[in-house]
Image (cartoon, rainbow over all chains, first blue to last red; front, side, top):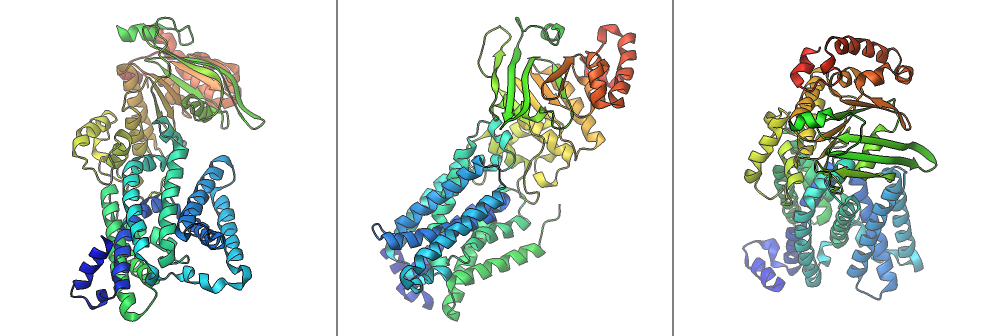
Length: 278
Length: 284
């Protein structure tokens, strides 16, 4: 199916879509940016930017571990490790009385240090440097299939989880009084974030992946007045930044991930000027 | 008739044949620190029980223990009007504060939808639920706030919205944790007025943590002074006259007792249990 769609894209009268790698890149952008748009609404409203940042760092260790073990496919080990890492942080956060920032800070720096340590093992760091800034040309048909599966999964989870997350974001005791399972809800959200981060890190890059989890919603938040507008705008902004950024990156020969982030930050400043005043 | 039956029960008496929530031997520890121990309370439907006490007395923790959020010793028993043990009551809870981002674009309607339905707020049209939400909000005189953002509400407005939420579905036991700050005097009076109406109209037990002894004297059926355990409890007069209350609250409680006492003398049949909001208003 993916070959069929990219064949269709190739027949469109756009010069930049004549290359197979650009067709794949566009499909990846179309699939992933709406997810960033959705998830970022909760990251921003819940002030979880630091947490989502640490997930990228966890994914970094996952990449290193996957390369070192070499037994399963790198993407699988990456996803598995990221999800475990997310569960672990959520669990410690619930058990410990230390501040959330401190706990996330500890895990985040440990994860990135372990990742760097493993990657530099045997002096082979260079082959991993692509993960720092991301490589859009690296997307394969298998990656796209995985992306499609994740896309469907995240939409379903988001439809099921969002109301609970919204109540939970206001007050834990209140959420419990309405029969919510706090730990389960939080860890599911963390796991979903982890999967999306893990699957996008190879082409967005570790350094800027968190920007995609913050900027779309931060921009939408400036102008939206309710949850529906917030979601629509956030998804729209992520989507437009993705497509515009990809085209710009192609014609100017720049890193696509970084260009997408810059475009979405422009959206942020535009909406900041338009800000609702209530 | 129902009201009379409920209100004639002595505030601390037994629960026979009355809808009642019994809190038995509640105790909470945080590590080795005892927050409170051996708290026994009977809360009847149609009555307002006020929890008072100094900061750190364990008032909010007691509510969280009742909610089942905090690990505690002892047990909660709920008996309905027919004297049957029906297990756990439906509890409505109004928290002391919300920890949300004030710039977040969550409207009052969004919050209601998220609480009332499993259909995703970001996707599902809100039309079918809107009348129900408006009805809920009108109960706390806040129907005009339905499309406002939570972050744009004043402290008193937010508290009323949360109260409306706690009342849908209608609970057997309503727990109110009064905000310490952010609510002005008008907002506070409106809130107490609504609570007094609820107490008169609905068949539910209300436990209220309050920092305003004035309002407590005016509206509560039963007052419980809490400080690491129940220090004393009874009608507002009884508690405010108690020497231990005066020690904890200083002069303030003393004045309160003086102010309540003449009313009690003038109208003995209404003493301390003025059950109609209008009476409460007149009593000022």
